[in-house]
Image (cartoon, rainbow, N blue to C red; front, side, top):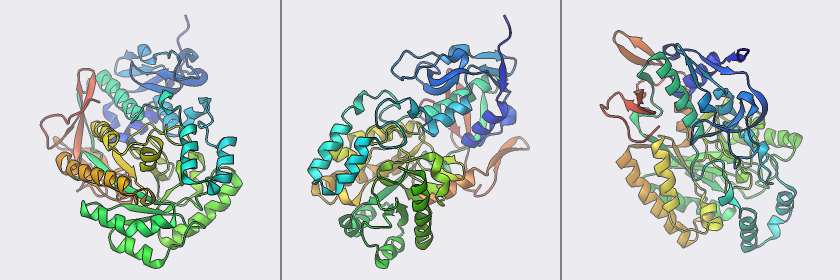
Length: 468
């Protein structure tokens, strides 16, 4: 039989691993993949990891619920090189950029709204709150039947990085490889709280919400709608900043149509950029988490916060399947990794923090970003406010108990950009970190432990908890 065609993906995947871990890739051998064939589709990489792309023999499925081909059985080791039946770098990009949503058959799967969605937004302003919420629950009623991304937290992208690194380490005979730890000062996770201000009532409640956050030791970012919705007085902006909170831009006018048409999007983007310059805002979030990552370059922000980790309870289904920040070309994406307060209270109709606690435990296992949206508009009512206070009380204890870095989105952006310029280099018999803000960085090691990859911080003699 003729030899299977191979593509050398070492440079691309080495760059992908370096971007994620900030590790010395010259310690690893080459990575090759079989020439992909067939259509884009879903397949497995091991028993618990679903991915999307092309793999050997074109054995992919258009539906996540179908019986999926396991590409991990095709892994071959040739000396110190690894050969796979998929291109892992491409699979990672497909997931982060939600390209798999093209395979979704439901109306919420694509980048643009359905006819039902357009009609809803045309009449939304005339509907009482109880009618809007009933319609939203009907539209999202199938959320529990969606099989991908994984609920309530999806870490497929993170596991792909880990599993590819593990295979390369085994082939090269490397048991322990150094990298730059994800968060500054050895923090196990990072926590950011954000508040999207949707109405004048939410704007007027913002000062009380800042009081509440500060009572539990937190600062947050406020995203304001710059046009049509409400006035944004200078005193309001000044209070947010003087109290150490952050101000960002929330969509254009929150009408749900930002991404409907590319030319109209570009027109609005120019205005959004001017508002960002006027307010000195570096971060952006779209309304209702509608998004099109391919259009993001038109917005002149340092970071974006519009992509959910898993979007089962959002009108636009999908999710980036990672718990870590990632770059969309020049823009840093800070994914939303927990359920929005609106979805919790008005779609699930739960006034409990149990789901949030479960999500936090999963994020802790992968040392990921713990990011929240709590709208001032939806915690004015006493029952919702009590639930938010219970969350803040739990988070206050979690931050101390688990050593979580709690900060503002802008600080995460600055750190992740500094970390992207760091590298691990040998110095005598040791490894050291070079680059900006290296004094805050911590050296860590990815270590083979049976079939798992575990992390060790240099200061620790034992692995950090959680399977990899």
